[in-house]
Image (cartoon, rainbow, N blue to C red; front, side, top):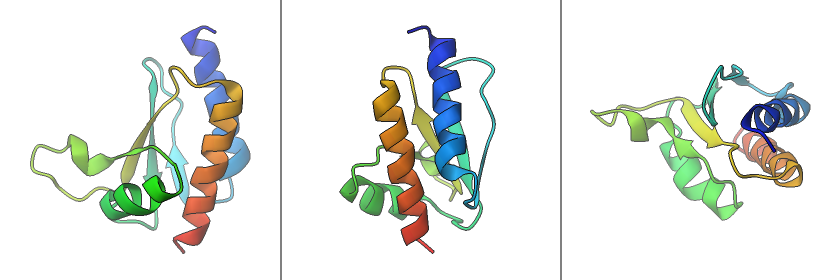
Length: 102
């Protein structure tokens, strides 16, 4: 599957599972990553490194990309090698994680 098709599929699954939750994202114009901003989570570090891993949600906390290690409400996800089924399940799990963090 071409990367553009993977991106389109990932965006569709994000919309399907995350549209009603306090999270923002934009469709990337290039690359294989999507940045999500969790509006109600000022620092995603603990959420991702502890709770997300326990629920088998693999995301990277935004602070990992800060040279100063600053807190971040962002997480980064990759869609480059996932199948449609895996992307759908990943976004379902991500939504569940967000629901349980409220």
